[in-house]
Image 1 (cartoon, rainbow, N blue to C red):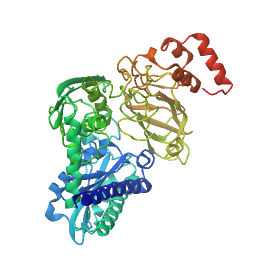
Image 2: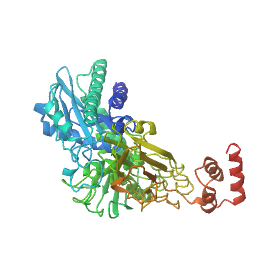
Image 3: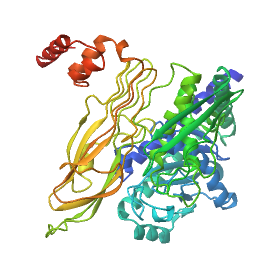
Image 4: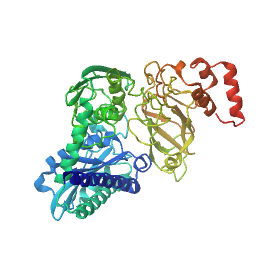
Length: 568
């Protein structure tokens, strides 16, 4: 009988996962911002009545969903259980109680069945603009970075707070997009709620208590089994990255113990004066994600499977920034945390983790306006265009790194066509960057080359959010480093990797995004893989000769065959 119940609960668990995936897809289909519709910068999850995460959507980012795992407790506390009612919708973009910066709006909806609270649905989306200085690292405090929405009711028993909507519309540059995204967030929670009610009625459930216990107990035990199968030990990881005006050192100490793994960020650089600081909730999210990827990747993400990973960081460090530190670009640091964790894990679990990759997303935002040097077109308007892009991921022990793929965020590269429809921007060039992947037995993933400008009659401020300019992705176990980031105007004028910079009418910005590091000595690479890379244009003849030791005659023969369309 117990086995029959377990099978039924497993079916319900799988059903919950499909419910939250439908919830996420509803958000993708209804969102206004391209960052949600095209890049998938979102998360969705379902929680029990205690506020514990039971399941998350496959679509979305670990920074959002793992941070959001802790958010429901804040909502319950600040709203008050006695004030939770059917038809309510709650909202916040508090960086320390949500997902790390003001540009992420989290919406939570209670789920009732026959008048009884059975759980919560939550979702988060990155919005194009939230006012203030705009999306970038230039602020000196969070108060400059935009509008702060405390935890509050967006809708009270089905009635939307019109005053809140007017405040939001009056403080952002793209009011239709932002308000539309909030409605999309609330709608996707409603979709999840309806599917949950259908499931509960189908299985004759009055609440989620037993299903919740089965999910959490099974996940906890499975995770503990993986941890306890490891040899106890301690190892340190370190990585240096560009920072804003000075390099940042990230240091992680991992300790494998009985029933838990500790990750301590003591020794990491202090809070920065500019907006690259990380609230602890985001540090916890990406530290846990790195550990789960390496140790328990196939165990579903929920409150119990995350609990054995204990994350700590000193107050006032850049990975535990306190209010009112500026945090707009917390992802630039946060996305580098998994590679730092992997640096330590490589000492504890050899031949398991990949080489370093590009890490943070290669994002930029254009604030376009009519040209100021002469009379602009009569129909010229101000527009904000945000685009998400990726460098290469690090090579894995037995596989090459992925080209132009965001790890650890999982956010998708935005299509050129979608970006150009959002405003008067032209992407003149977007292609893979040859020779950018670090050489190794397994090659690092390639970055991209992008050339971006404005349509006739416009100038723009370019808000750069790049890293790896001075500190490219390191290879692992003999692999070589990937290529660094470069950025300049098309006339050769150098630009900074971070910060708002003016680009005059007629000028373009040319960027080369970083490649991932290689894994293992290059001389051990399979010659057939080198031949494939030459044929596909991933590496040049020079790299084949200098990095991999291939003789010139062989390289010339491969190139000649490729020229005539012969298969590699």
